[in-house]
Image (tube, rainbow, N blue to C red; front, top):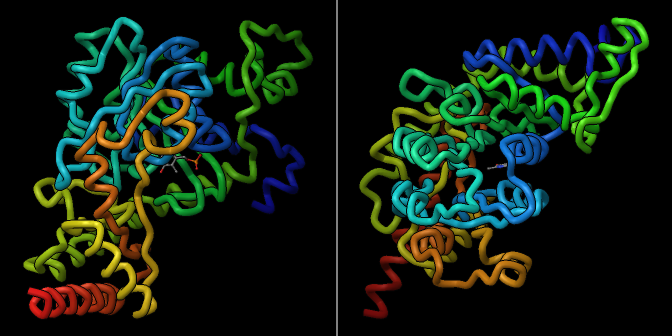
Length: 369
Ligand SMILES: *Cc1c(COP(=O)(O)O)cnc(C)c1O
């Protein structure tokens, strides 16, 4: 960090090139382009595969709104597919296939909570239908699934280094691809659509540049890249610890009534980004959230479904009832605390509070019944 500042070259330069090279090598992918956020990576990925005005992008509604917003910013219509099941809350390939039209340019796979989507089906569909597959890997940096890293199954993989992600640079992101022309287009669009960057011009002596198509300023800088290089070295240990904490949660919550931890069937492959639990209905969710809050345990919610946000309802005509599994999951979902410095005793405390809440729900039901 001090080396970067002393070098007096602060925007993209050698540190950024090293970060891109290291991140690409880690994920065994040809091209990695560092950008200012995960949202920027998604926006550039969509634009680079031809998502333009009037296009459609098929994606889950159970995601952070940025996945959809980035498509809307391209002038496209986000088309939402339901999840496979409340125990496998990633996008359902059967629904994805059914939603593809001649206007579809891309499918988005969001590896929710740190678990891989059904990628072999999704890659087959993308290939057969001639559309791009974009992976939103905000939850899954450094995660191997089968013989490939997540982010390299599809056309482009998009990562986020926001503060609450498995690796962070404060703000930041990365787009990875094995397709050289897509990589070139992402690089160009990252910096105004210009044909050469400032570092290159500085390095290789002043040269004219041209603009082939308008782009954005989605660059990162040397300070963020220096942070990213350090974080990347810590990633595999962080992911290992997160998976271990996840497993501990599964053991402590196993056999409990009314509460389950999704992805039980595929629990071996995870980056353990967040710990979602599924309760049976909204009332139980509320009761457990309140009991945890009283016990000093903060919870959160991943996610309010995108199709039910005001803009999406009004602009695209989406309605409650459209995606029953997604809506049920969102109504019943609670995110429990998970962070790498969490101790085994902390997991016991949180799961003990969940157990107490469930027992008190049962007592009340007996009284009423
Ligand atoms: C965090 C996140 C993003 C956006 O990343 P930013 O770096 O915050 O722009 C996109 N998709 C998902 C699923 C995320 O969790």
